[in-house]
Image (tube, rainbow, N blue to C red; front, side):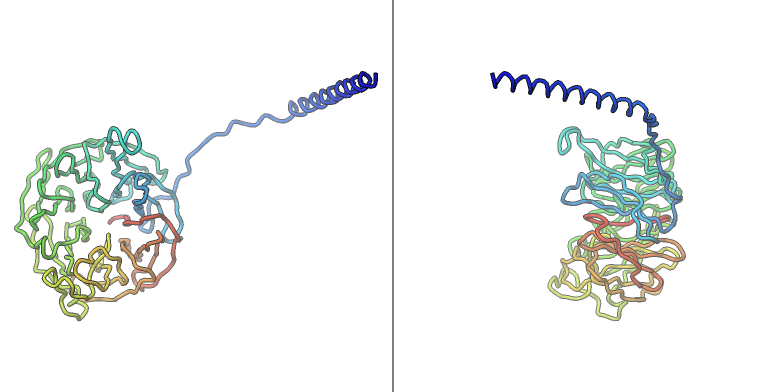
Length: 401
């Protein structure tokens, strides 16, 4: 009997609880029904301000996870990250001379790290960072990001893309129609150093140059005689070019500078020495590989300020085969007088140096931690640092460069 009474009491409590819960639920439903209806959210795109000389692009190859490569959009005056776009697997970036667009050459595979390969050239709106055109390429180079893997002509009408699929060649893209206008085969030669609106030059394995003049759908190719010995004292591919007239300063591993006027008939001047410009002895090349002195090195190891003609080169103390070693100083040199202007000690060894092209120019360096250092070019003073902007900062791109 006691069990039966307890059961009946429990049943009554359960029923009472349900009634209370029901009343509460009704109240909750009523309260919910009385609340205002939330309006549907509408997405939009924030526009960045127009491109300025101090709004730069920074290429990050993300070496340990290269398919996640990226390009950062940076306000260098404030040291502020404005945005980012993808630059998958050893991507490259170039900017329209007037800042109307920027282009990223990248490669993806249908299954992430394998499958069908797709080489692309997306064009980005510089204010919304949205893709305005996604050009499919016949192929491109997959070595490591170099500025001259992807180049643009003086008026922005053509983009040049170095390809090794299936052999060495340069694709010419018409930026108005976003189409491949032609492919110029260049066996034994590589990269693209633009000059003017209708031509570019490639550097060849024999130590000479291949000059390409574009006339409509035709391409005329001429070759220079070798001016350096690739086995004894090769030149850096990352040597600076002034795109307006094609003047290039090819820097050798030992520190020789070859001023070159690029054209359909490129002319190479007699070289001068970085070390002699600084009052030192000229550095030996491969004939004395263990001789230690100040030498150029790094990745994007040099930059040129067009208006002043001042060239900035990363330098370190080392032997001949230390051409990839990070620089501990920047040497500022006058390309007209072949004289050293200044030596700028760095707070951390750097593999890249960049410069803006305005009247109040900024310099940029990196370090092994992915920090971006921003300098005043005129005074040589460090202005600010952006801690860990990325993983592997390889080079910067500034307006008009």
